[in-house]
Image 1 (tube, helix red, strand yellow):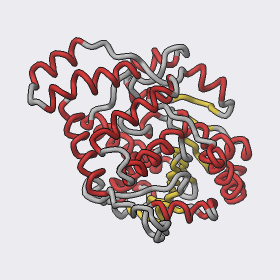
Image 2 (tube, rainbow, N blue to C red):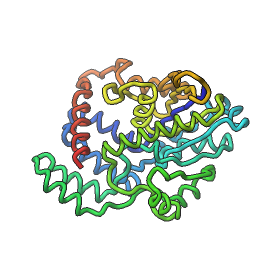
Image 3 (tube, rainbow, N blue to C red):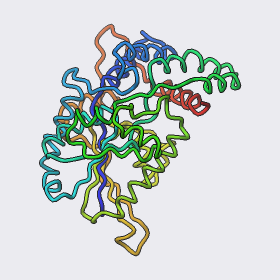
Image 4 (cartoon, helix red, strand yellow):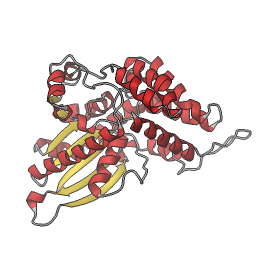
Length: 341
């Protein structure tokens, strides 16, 4: 069976900001309804790439930079023989955080990878000026039920392209052997492959576009598995939400109804029995999900943050509250807004 390894990127500056904001909300320092705007403004203040959502790995207390190295140190020896036998096929999201996460193990194994936008994070990237426009001019129209005026404003807007160019990616990461932007359309692929145009078209990806992309990614992965020898491995450096949507679709779980929490640099494994290798219908086996043996004591911090380990509260301090319901409601509202665009 062909194995597919899904690897989430390391902790980013954006992840760190979100965690700090969640703590501030839990402590009552910030209202849930204000957290989005404040979080956005913090990202914008950090510069263009963070403002666009093309966030980098954090080096706070080691952060994602250390996690990526720990991943390479642990998984490098495991995957070395497969790489030496040319039995691994590496694919990396065009977003900076995934390329940074892949970099240590790619250098260690002297491997080559393809940049694949089908496995980018949802909802893509959005230029700082466009984010402010959506939040301050479009969202109020949605909230007030003025759909016609909202559509008119959206149609009049020219969106700003975002992300790195093909030349910038290849210059920074010498292990990139190919950039496959064919899924974005022939004209887009041609424009990006010229090297100087940012790869993302601009504005957030709509949920209907995300659904279509995930389905296309699933077809691509299973089609790839059908063409490979049965002992080969496909490795994807991707993102938490994308990994869950894609993996759950492959194994037959309703990813919209089942929520998840994925650790940074976690590894999930699915094995697929290609239809070309058997007279039976395609078989799929979920080996493991969200595994992080390489993170050692950093796992404890993850368990503590997610409430599995009881956190001690110092005398006189207010106990932290569970934000799950409020955060879930915020995600639902955000999805409804994005679906209307």
